[in-house]
Image (cartoon, rainbow, N blue to C red; front, top):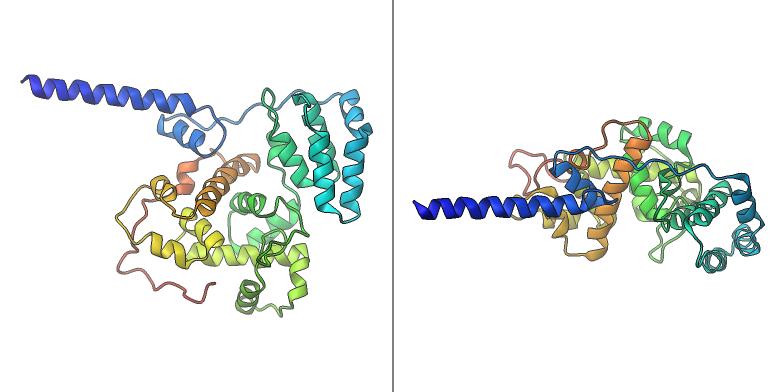
Length: 310
């Protein structure tokens, strides 16, 4: 009888070690911190807001010549130069100075600078700066129209464009939702929109086309956010192939995505969406709810895939 007892003791030791590792990361921000907390049966707790910025702190940021030059460069359409100037100026700043600089960027709707600057703080964390909600009324209106979760859309949009309406990728994706012209043309036809390529530069139209496409991909994957998020980034055909394997938990499936950019993208989008869900009033915030069911081949009775989706 000694062998079963030894095996049980070894199992208890493994479980204790696993729990200790989960506890070590459960307080961290991001995908695995959120997942560890829920695995331990703990709620995902949002960090408390920092102390309110005092007027002198805000005034010092506004008077900083480097930040002023950076914002002026952005106004002139010289985004790369403005970002470089901003990043150079923020070197060596403490948390309170970074929070004040991020607040200044948010006031000027330089959302990428706001997010990226606020993310550098350590002792004080401002989630409202790190997860801002620009275009809020239009996002809520459009997501209601399309029938998709606004927190999910915000989580994806934050990763795609940092809310910069004029950003354009090397591949030709444009705007808030980084929509490709070919994708936009197909989606516009399906929703009855008379599409012209120039329309992608309009934030409201870009948002409508991007959210409509995301909803189509989400529906094609029976509501699975991990699969749909991977499909939005890498095209739906890739996650269709990647799911053709033994059934695994969603987090394990994500970690096995063979394209590093997409693997990181899926984790960040879903983690973002958890925070946005909390900030928009959805309770309780849950990453596991967004991960959904185990992932594997589609059920034999499932409807055929929408192969026209690009």
